[in-house]
Length: 455
Image 1 (cartoon, rainbow, N blue to C red):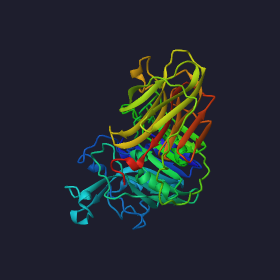
Image 2 (tube, rainbow, N blue to C red; image 1 turned 120 degrees about the horizontal axis):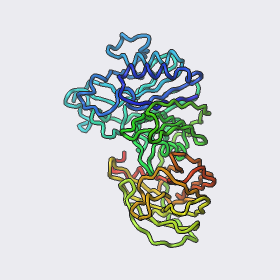
Image 3 (cartoon, one colour; image 1 turned 120 degrees about the vertical axis):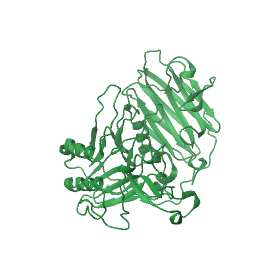
């Protein structure tokens, strides 16, 4: 049994954890693992100097065995870790939390000039810690891909951190922005890891990267279990946590006007068997896919999440159409089954490098509701819709890393009716019997090997 917490931020750290302990203890009976969100202890908007009071030294559990609840005196000024350890011990569960840690360094200890010690002689790391059910510290992970976090440093070397449990085998650790990149996420998958723990402070980014939308998409596309704990901050548009397996999703996404309070999610999942280790997940050779029977429609360009997509509008109650961008071609077969007749939809394709708030290479096919009747509104954020469709969305990709999603009105996840992937790169998403109006259906492909800083 897994549990993830989504909590408001900016309470004093130890007080914060105590409050969550008392308010949710009754819900944790029988849970094996509990995951807290990124930045859940200290909050946001720190400078390098202002965060110093929140940082603790976290020893390497590969180098020493330490139970902070039993031996708090071994490492001074580690009150947060003691409390986390005792929380795990008290409830007899594995506990994953995110905190800030500090590690002294010197230029002589750095192995390369690119990873030189900061001028103040200390690394500040965004850190996940894992405590066993007896309180023992069993894993420590430093976030690799920072997202405008001036208080923290990127670790000098990529870490692939896993921990073992008696109830579900191996889990891997990633944090927030990490999920979009090859390191460490895909490297963990290459090692056969199929269960990921994911503390995050993720800002909702419709129409392609809403929190629960991409959490679900990643679980489906990577064929993994994902325990995703997101923080709640209306000011920063952060909400949405979930417990996902390839066949199920338990999630919560707050709506505008909902009370800004925490939510605990609890689910029972079957452990996934590890996959064989693979030395490479290189992309399949790309072949141009010859779609047949597609109607030709005039395409236009519009910005979606800062990228220039090629779009075609969906005419009439049903049909088949196609749009291409570079070597990527996307095809849609659709039938509107419940519509008010005024909502406008478009099929979009994008192949290229996203360059705003991060640089990474994409191939994306997306069916989106436009915000208005104007073509320029296609790709803008939309939260509500009435039109339900039966559709098949298909794309010819040059990568096997494609993450499918169907998101309907008011942040409702839909489980695709069928997903198929061919050996030559075609991915096919079919869905019928929608529960609510369609916001987005997407095939979000990551061409990691084309990233500007691919390693």
